[in-house]
Image 1 (tube, rainbow, N blue to C red):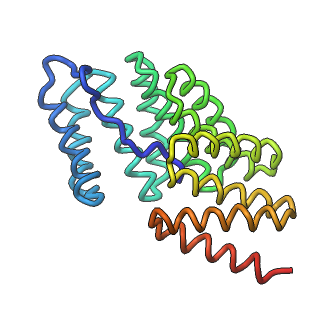
Image 2 (cartoon, rainbow, N blue to C red):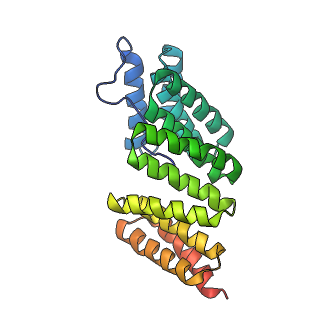
Image 3 (cartoon, one colour):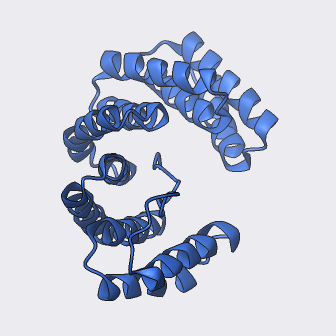
Length: 234
């Protein structure tokens, strides 16, 4: 899933006054997710408790976004969609543009992940626009990667290839190996559908080499399987 995996929390200098308990719960929930190897069972009640503690839209949006990300990771997509939309509206009211972009991007990613490419095509351009307003180039490239996936799933292969290539260029420039692997896998799939076997093989082999360099075990397995299918086929 091509989500923004930062699971946004309170940024330095943006704490809301008079709500130390809500802020503390957010930070504790983030620690459970990032430091306790995805201890979602411990994190979820904390984020839910925040919703009963405060009416501050920024803080509520952060809690909802984390709940949505957890639901999406667990493939609970209906719940994830509700959380992402509620989070987006909270961030909109709070004037938190980067939060809006993250919520829309993750909503689009969840749609693409379950094969709802039409919804992904509808949401991803809004995520791209919000990332541009937030002037966040990493998030913009990630939103474009989701858009490329949605377009590829809808057989709009030329546009998907152009957008995925641009995202690859950005992630190469910032040395983000994990996202580069994701881009190369997508480009490999696009070229398979284009019946351009040599280019598909080149993209997948580059992706495999990079995945091995960074120790991306899941990606190594997936790309090897795809290469095996492609190399043994006609």
